[in-house]
Amino acid sequence: MLLLRFLNVVAPAYFLSISLVTFGLQLFLFIPSMFQDPSAAPLCPSALLHGALFLFFSANAVGNYILVIQNSPEDLGTKEDQSLASGGAGEGAKVVPPGQEEDGNGQPSAVLPGTHFCRLCARVTQRHDHHCFFTGNCIGSGNMRNFVMFCLYTSLACLDSLVAGVAYISVVLSTSFASPLAFLTLLPHSITQFFSGALLSSEMFVILMLYLWLGIGLACAGFCCHQMLLILRGQTRYQVRKGMAARARPWKKNLEEVFGKRWLLGLLIPMLNVGSDYHKQKEK
Ligand SMILES: [Zn+2]
Image 1 (cartoon, rainbow, N blue to C red):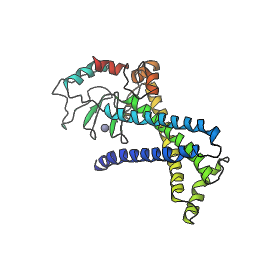
Image 2 (cartoon, rainbow, N blue to C red):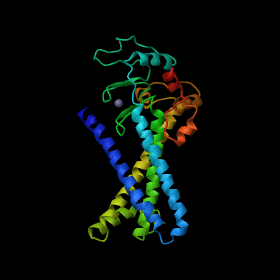
Image 3 (cartoon, protein in one colour):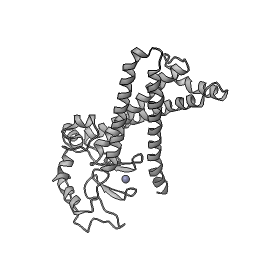
Image 4 (tube, rainbow, N blue to C red):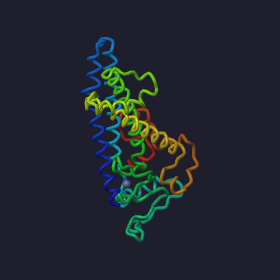
């Protein structure tokens, strides 16, 4: 438990420091280097386009990150949330009367199928999916949409930084990345060059960041795809783990429950999932 609590503090700090480093490298190194290119005139629009694209990806990633934390697990201990639970549960909902929601261990028992008490957050999450260490919060019905958007845009921002970083390194070190093996041999080559003094520490740092962006980008993309698959099936990670059956209803309804009717707007700007079934119940 102590290790989990430690991870809950270290992981957000790790995410924030990587974000700051990525911002710094993009805004002060990659984008200015695109403008300073000898063939700057034809490159200028592409440099501007790249800058705008990166800001769009990162604004969405950070915006949704904040919204995931803001829409953290709801406390089902209050009267208001219990009435929400009774309305929002759908089939088989069973609401425990106030004052009886604690089990023998002094912890609230599961009120609805898929509802879970997280010991790290010390709160109950409706349609619990998992505890995300990078946001330090539980992912459930309240913040699932923002979490998927966060994964999607973090992945895009990382892959965008990877492309910009590869372009920067290929100019600075005059290396070609035409061969698919070039990226694999880049790390061992640059480590040898770095220790022989032929490579600056800033260049070595950018090369290490390339591999980190690739790793985070692919991991987030995989996570996003897996999450989308579960949403379409109407299941949560928690339900899969507990062997609970998926809800038998059309995939369109499952999708609408999480993304709401204004999903396209939510895809472009970080916003609450206003218009989704869950938030309609909460507004009542
Ligand atoms: Zn949690």
